[in-house]
Length: 466
Picture 1: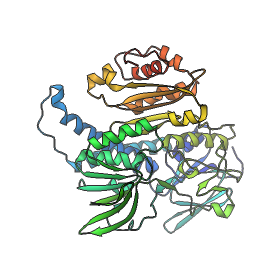
Picture 2 (picture 1 turned 90 degrees about the vertical axis):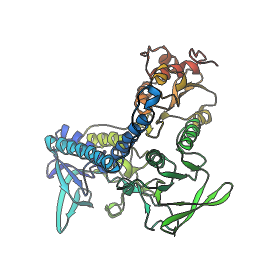
Picture 3 (picture 1 turned 60 degrees about the horizontal axis):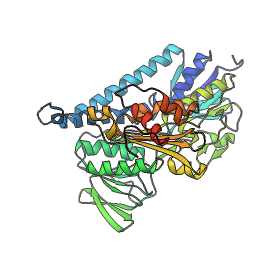
Picture 4 (picture 1 turned 30 degrees about the vertical axis):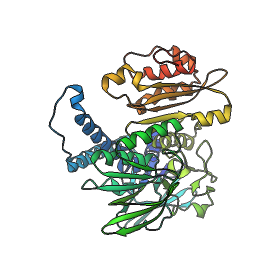
């Protein structure tokens, strides 16, 4: 490999982008060092994807037990042992983090605990306490991730105003919580705390919840959360947060005027900011796109030999995108010719019901292509949804008018995150509505809903009218 360097690849950050890059580089025979200041797995494994899904899994079990009588199963009223819920979450996280450490060890990746900083285009300084180590590598991959964004609202430093990090460490279920931000983070936490019995308020400044999703999906989610007891404000902004009698008063500017809500906690869930400060980028003149690192499709920065991936390079801030970028960067760093394709990127939001999507929304498709074909199939018409008792939701497919190429697919309902994979593969292969409609799907399954939506888009719906 590269002569004159201690390592072929040095990676700064061991999240889902960084550790995957390390494993891929090691597969290719590279000498790899991975630097992480906290715990391997990054936000995804430790403060994001995995712990929140563990809490949501407990909430799903709770909901199932509460509804057991409808299935002919009688139980005593369920009781939430929140301490046990948190312990289970921690055990899941610990097991997965241990698994990643084991993979890195078996691959021969050297891991260094400490804070890394670029000192040159081929050198990193790693500080751990009073110890500073200089390392050099033929290529460097920056995978420093992101942190919760704190909006410019008066009162965000008050006790009880928290981020998603603190929301995962409650020892008791909060009595009430006001969530600023109605995107993926905000709506998932709203689902969790509403299920556990908290009074929940969401404030979203845009005109719909989950702003990047299809309008029909967002409207359905808003109705569903409202039925779960969540109070939702859209087109609304938080003006100030103040202390009041041991609680927090949140002043909101809503479309119909000003209002105020009082809650035990305020959760800041209005997005995330890249961890690109203090890395040494300015010292080397790395080109930036505001606070994000500018890269090309091969994940190369403006400085030869330096790559960047994941949340540090910008939207979409998704773990699976970071992993794909990590593979791309590692392959290029080891002499391959690899580029990433962002054309088909799925998104999953684990609310109740779940949301999953890929491609263009109906609105975006019409703006870009003019006339499109749209098919929609409700879960209520699915045999498996009826059998399992999860009839809330639908599958919506958007196709190009002339040839029927699938432009987007949007699901809200039970198992949406698992169902979206078919659409991802179909769109990657440039499949059409006809091809999905003609593919024989197993019965009875929820996957039939995708086939039925394609049939509806072609005007050939079988199990629904219209």
